[in-house]
Length: 308
Image (cartoon, rainbow, N blue to C red):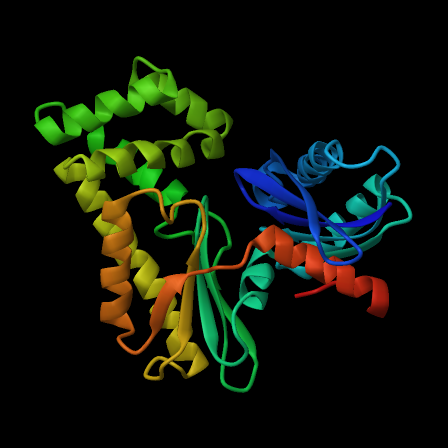
């Protein structure tokens, strides 16, 4: 049996879909992170491979992978994309391989014409098309100067807000929950973990903040409101540079922070509607890994390439 694989990889996990040559999804699996700018190129390639192994374990033992498309965060720069392509060619010999960004997958799932996708996960970015079909983006270049409103940003802001604020009840309660969730008893222990790998700390704090906001914690709610404002501003900048800010266009939301908190979802919707009142805001319906698999299936006919 011959199959194609599609991957949607980021700073937390890698989703994989196996599809037969008729276009039917036959298996799904998951692996660790695969964003090379966050965890390194070899580790990112290993994350893709692990996701493939987990997925192919569910199909026929004689399965043959003939094509794959890996949509990975951190591959926007041509040199990053080329390096990942080389590593994946070594990991999947004889397979037709396309490397693109996770943002390319999201935008490919939108209707034709002007459109924007806001991705809010471990990192954050917005990608869109203008009326002429030109593709543009904002953000998504890592936590040092980007990723505003992301899980990383929220987690980092939460840790900064709660430490040293024991006298304020909302901060004190949120701080206790964060320490418990991270398995730490002191903020010095949290700092030590951050020095080793900040991506293993700050994004993990987001679910605590989300749950606390839904439970009425005022500090958690203010942190999520601030994140929603940042994401809306990011999206507005892209809409303005695309020349569609005053037009009606579909605006899709996706990413690991979306759908995790009723409070955050409502805050984000309010901010997006305020910034772009003519946009039609909704969840991105298509599955990114499945979109990648369809690109891989298409490559069997047109030949492999490098997207994005």
